[in-house]
Amino acid sequence: MHIGELAQATGVTVRTLHHWEELGLVHARRATNGYRDYAAEDIARVRSVAAWRELGLSLEEIRRLLAGGATTAQLEEHRSRLTAEAARLAVMTEAVTRALEARSMGIELDPAEIREVFDGDDPSQHAAEARERWGQTDAYAESHRRTSGYGKADWQRMRAEQDDLEQRMATAMLAGDDGTALAREHQDLISRWFYDCTDELHLGLAALYVGDERFREHYDSRAPGLAQWLHDAIAAAH
Image 1: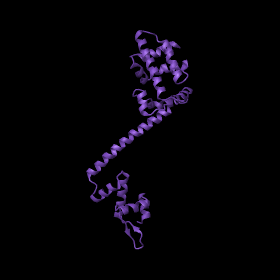
Image 2 (image 1 turned 180 degrees about the vertical axis):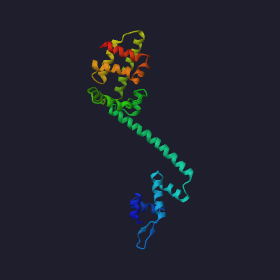
Image 3 (image 1 turned 90 degrees about the vertical axis):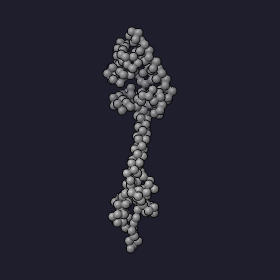
Image 4 (image 1 turned 60 degrees about the horizontal axis):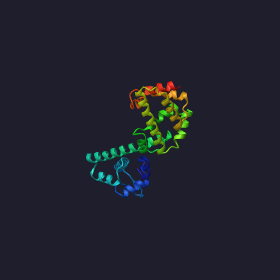
């Protein structure tokens, strides 16, 4: 097989084959016309080198493997390196994915800031679901427009207001308050930070708080039964 044919058959460029030959990794036989010819064993060696490179080995590592044969220990060591690198890349990929999802929701924060602002929670995990359920609504578009301009300090102020309101809700529930005033304050908070929360939209949120286990768990973590109490307070307010 001539060098051009070998390059086409193996996907290794002619220039690379020349380089490997200079390093002694592969061998070629010279024909009477001076061209390089590759016998079956030479072709097999080129394929081996190409396979090792595909696995990420350096040319020096490949030289040692070809000189002494690939031992089980060497293969296991390389597998460990590949596994560690794959894990590192997976973490990086996930971080980039979360950052992109957060931006799609209008949250212009890096992953560390998201964890800090949202107490370890990551709202971007629900970005795809939110787009599917509400992506075509005016409220979603308005929320995205507003939150795209929020920095870390804005999100921290919003969370502080939200935490304060939820704590006062829990206190009011335990005191036997019907919560209608706090329900309207909840509606105002949403309108101030995200979108114009009409009475109809507010009632829809009330149904979500008791119908979606994630929202129920969020409120009930403040005080058992708070999700149902807020639902009833919103219904009474409208």
